[in-house]
Amino acid sequence: MQSFLKNIPKVIKFIPDHRPKSVETIIANKSRVLYFPVNFPQLFPVEKSIYLLHIVWPHRWEFDKGPDDFFDVIFRLKEEKLPFRLSILGETYEDIPDVFQKAKNELTDEIIHFGFVEDKEKYFKILSSSHIAVSTAKHEFFGVSMLEAAYCGCFPLVPNGLVYPEIFPKICLYTDKEHLFKLLKQFCLDPNLLQNCDMKFDDYCDKKLVPEYLKILEI
Image 1: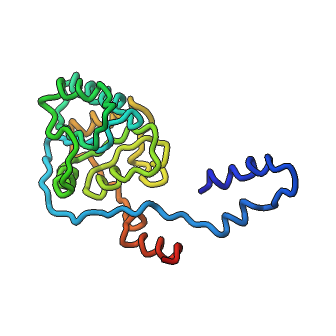
Image 2: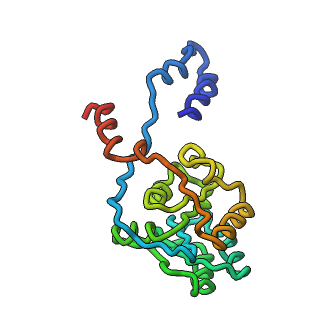
Image 3: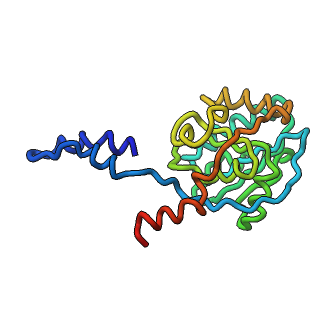
């Protein structure tokens, strides 16, 4: 909302005459932000390894999700002979980045799941069995998959940019690939170093948000 309000004066400058005054203030006073309503799953106990780090990447297999950056880091972990397991989830489309085939060929010992999981219950069980969910997105409006992963008990590691700083605590943010590598290396050596990121999910839950949407839209 803030980016929208800040750009109103730029648009008004194009009006040749009779420019309205204080438009951004008027709109701001009438506005509020409602997040995308996420249907969080019912959780069931799933055993996690206390010795072997399980990393999950739950995104569309497209270039804007930054798969090259993600696998650059993962390949470095393997080169340093660090122990970990890997689940690559998310939907695929016609134009799949080449790095996914390279990963499938070179990470056979590490990969547990590779490909889209249509069954939602199985999908959430995989998330619940994972220690860390990673985003390397270049473009992200909200990030439902990362919220779902965090809700299922994954520690979210996300870029310090896009929408992420608004949603995730500072402890979950990384600055660049090198920072991401160092964090994952540390957790590969000892998964028990992972902390609870202490997120509050009520603001994103459909049970809370849908009634608010219906009220605003007068449906």
